[in-house]
Length: 117
Image (cartoon, rainbow, N blue to C red; front, side, top):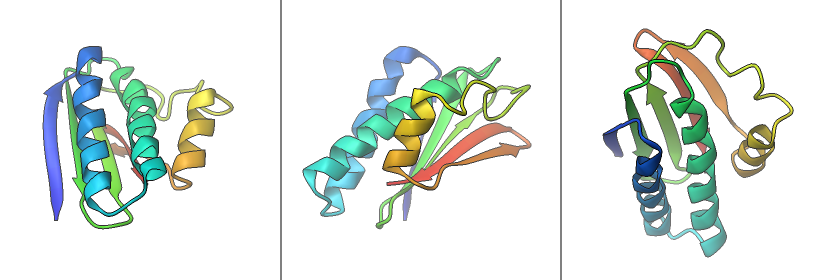
């Protein structure tokens, strides 16, 4: 089973995604650290997706079984995906530490990032 939400690409909406991720993880009998990690992972991944030029909508899908798979998709067009400054950045360190399996993909509808927590 999965939950999908599409929201306008606005920094103020990151809290909606964070709350959704933390709620899904908390329902999976995960500990407090895993719940916090999910919120942090969403913050970092959403920041990358919001940075894609032309992004007006972010679509986020999360599975509800462990390990929780999270996909954030942009409807914009990325010249470089992942962004050129991602490698060696704090965002890379945070996402790799939390997920260990971060995947950047290009789809016909725009770039997306997938991770698991």
